[in-house]
Length: 317
Ligand code: 3EB
Image (cartoon, rainbow, N blue to C red):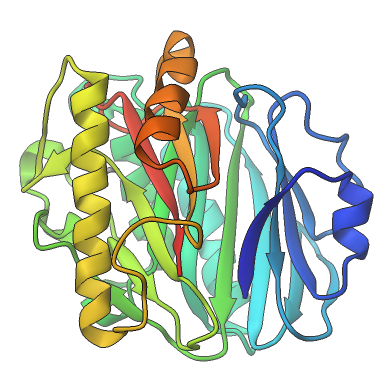
């Protein structure tokens, strides 16, 4: 599978052979077509964002199954689910992940490689009542059992800057399991100490897919070293720390896949989530200077700790 950022109409992207999924970002995203492969992500973008397109080298079938939109081909499945979130985010997450668990169990694509979660007001609430912490509790309840480290998907969890009243969940699943990776600079998220909430988040820092024809999948990566947030007051320093974390993940992945390029480059794709709307242009300029060959989409989104100003996820090959 390849991931591309394309500046074309959604209809063009959807008629390209082998298109598994197409994502539009921000208010300028095309009005949602009814094609289940198209998802409008409810995060504002800097400027007019391109479409994110997932391509496989195979025929793709697609459909709706109740509240799930799906597409499959080439051993991979895209799925998306939207759940009403009336304020009880724990219940919404438990419901969404129960639905996802049943869906995966009844499907030939049983292995989630990568999951994205977009929810409202992620850092609202104090202490263990914070919505991200409640989300983690509900997610674990919906998954229903403790996942072994070798089963963890790569993931992103980001807050909508405006209330939407819904939780968006989408995923990439495969017929074969991939290899979850951890970052030696960071504590495994599933081992975060109690101070971050009653339920550590169940995700791996990256995942190497089962096929050599797929990129390394990078989880949402912030300026976290060990388990602690770094550089609370400096966006530039947080970006530097994130790039160090991403390079560390690539180093780790190269132990098992030496053919991966050692640095972020033209085969990398990144999505950048920036907390403060006023900082989007600054972040864009820093990344244009530091990673001139890396295609990026810059979005206004809230990271799950107050002090984290920016997070980056993406893919690398
Ligand atoms: C962090 O390092 C940042 O809860 O699924 C990144 C990726 C983060 C995924 C999740 C959270 C999640 O802890 C937060």
